[in-house]
Length: 528
Image (tube, rainbow, N blue to C red; front, side, top):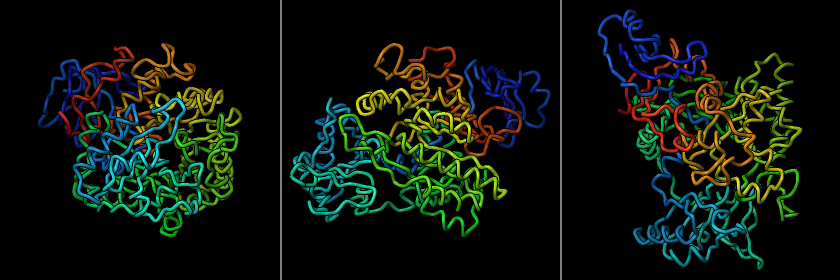
């Protein structure tokens, strides 16, 4: 048994919100309270630890992460730079240190941060700095990529190549391929890159776990695919998985899942099945999020809608028949509208067939039409959102969505209507650090204080307690794990983090510098 005492504990349990001691055995919490009370409950060998007044919180969960891509991405060129020139310098440096013909991979560029006009980079700029290596750089949004001529040649992309379904090879005024690939067109090049082995992915995730522990993360909802799942299963089998993982499966697998009778929740307390993940549209950065009205100053562009609500419902029906919940990427207002239409049909189908009303989700809900804003709560659909997106995207949202941005990244509206909310990061799109997300949620400002002291559309701000709940209780609910995760209470998993400072007693800006000084998962210290 372990007894942690002399602590400042925020349990997030409404029945017992604060405590000074916590008693742990067998990976579970036996009780919370004060030292004398808990010592009287202890039996056998008792390991006591004086926490010296430090703050303890439940472990935080990132409710939307691409664990394989984030882990492998730590070895890529960091392209999230303030200028295009710095990005090119980093690519050139990596190319110089690579063998001729070896792929140079990078991630994180955002043309909207490089120029006021949001001008796209070009194939020629990459050719100039790295003529002897194929280059493939994914945009911050993961919905666009920038490639050089060598990479385009390996993919057999010419000026005459047709656009794939739901994607585009960007072309200049003369019809030439610019090196920018949008949505499914990215696969034309990425499919030529040597695939990492399952063992590569497993090792990368293992190296990433301590990074996440330091950020206070004890659980994730993973949105990568088969190879990620296989690596996670291998880690679990070897007792090396030290994160709670809710694993979502791609919509392309819904037929196989239906045939197998796979259902949401199958697995164990470390790794279990979440939802079937579908994509409704693209993203704001490459202007592919599906909108009702065109992007500002782009009268012909309303983004890319991958399917309508009817087609999505067909996937939903196959999932519901075996007890699998759905989760759908929707960023634009048109995309969110179509998902909600499908979910409305799905709720009727569940009722008619006597099926359970499962916990369906929308990932991102980045901009929503005023008429659709109340529908998530009405349909009991989880708003799975990423507060750090708002501070990254706010200037681009104002530029490309104009006044519509008032209803973008609108956590407060969803909370007021009563929709369940879970927070994550979409890493590697953003940093998975939940303290950066908490700062964004309560301030709607960047680290430098922009755009103003009040924040961007400040009426959407949350309190710290509300935002913290979305990283704990809300994430647990979204993963069907609210009976074992999300708070520090009797019989819950002993997953907790220790902080030197109480987040409720510091300025919002100081949230940016918080991290875990110790992290416990399943009653064992994984970081001290």
